[in-house]
Amino acid sequence: MWKVWYCKTHGYYRDEEKRCENCVEIMDEEKAVRLGKLLSGILRHFPERFGVRMSVEGWANLDYIARVLSKRNRWVRKKHIIALVKSDEKGRYEIKRNMIRARYGHSINVDLDYEDNELEKLYYGSNEEEAERILEIGLKPVKQRYVHLSTSVEKAIEVGSLRSDNPVIIEVDAKKAQEDGIRIMKATEHIALAEEIPPKYLRIISESMK
Ligand SMILES: [Zn+2]
Image (cartoon, rainbow, N blue to C red; front, side, top):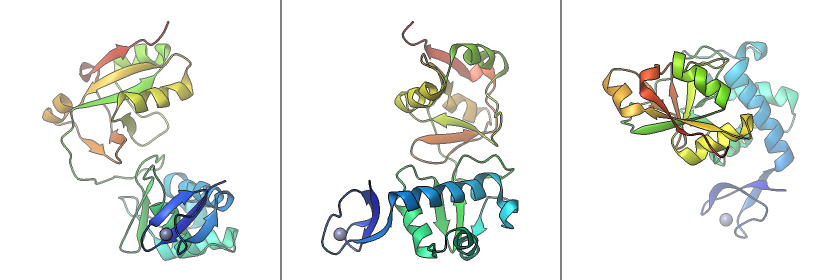
């Protein structure tokens, strides 16, 4: 079982053991997971259920979020949320000037405003049946606000493996799409977001092991 730790030298991190004598435990895995689920739900899917007001770009007030979360879990303080965000290796959240937002994964209607990045190739992990349809109609978000693309084949295989034993990997010519005016935003090191990618920028690169 890992814990979230902090010290000035090591910063925030998740590990089973602390890295030095000065590291202090912020919370254990069970608490971090519980907090993460709730935070993700609020920031991505149902802010209104908790009376959270959110900006168009998905930002919510961190103090208010801390108050909301501590009603459900009495031990929660702002420092726990900060530790959760800063120790998160997937970079799910972002904190700026006492505001917090999820960087991806929204089902609610946000308009994320990440800086434009020039991208080359991106990847989408799919399965045979879905891949066929995607090549016809393009990539469109289903339940989510944006289509989520992977920045590497490895990550796309990971995603595809959640949905199929034989993931099919679709390559997106992000460079060409961007040149044609399609907006694609890099949300984290591993994830890029787009509203929609038409079929002409897509091709299947692996039909995996048949
Ligand atoms: Zn330390």
